[in-house]
Length: 261
Image 1 (cartoon, one colour):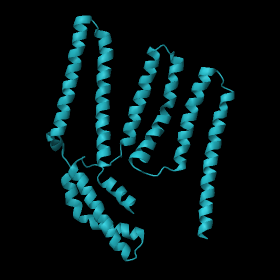
Image 2 (cartoon, rainbow, N blue to C red; image 1 turned 60 degrees about the vertical axis):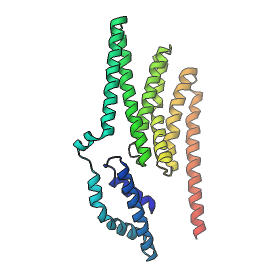
Image 3 (cartoon, one colour; image 1 turned 135 degrees about the horizontal axis):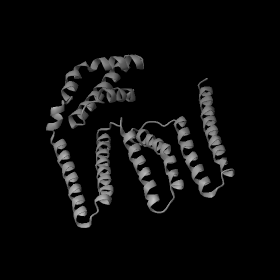
Image 4 (cartoon, rainbow, N blue to C red; image 1 turned 30 degrees about the vertical axis):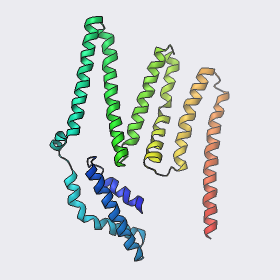
């Protein structure tokens, strides 16, 4: 029941700002729901009936939730927002000054622009994503955590392509790093759901994980060794692992049903 309450509160607080007040109100509402559920359970009501009645009892919190909604001007007046904007502007100005110094003293106008400004953008992006992820973890709201982690990993993967290129790896081999992107996105889902949200990971979600790693591993190993034909056995192994996992789950469910008879 507590998971259903948390899911409901996730939707209710989804568009509210990340503040201590919002977090405290959320915990207060959850505690109120659980207390109400215990009282209704003692009356012998079913779970669905208990849930609906508990949600109806939250009408008293409507005004408190509305009060937490921020308007654009309130966001601009937030000291944390102002400090973040000042820090960002200082960083941008420092980058511009550094670029001008390199251009004037060393005539590195072209290379300086290619190095400094992309680096500046990446640092700002990672700082923003890290800040959002930290707030998600702090307030236990992970609606966007999977997307944030996936974007960071994909950028690292893309940067790896250019690093390998600079190290002398030909693009005909370097492009293989992009085949790992589906695997990185799947891993992001596992981190956000299993580790951060503490949700159960079903076996069916492991199937895309298995094939998202088998495909790039097959392409990489085949491209580097030239053994395209024998290495296709990797797909057979992946299919066997999937079938064994599905059959084991099926047998467990059949065994559980037999126990209840």
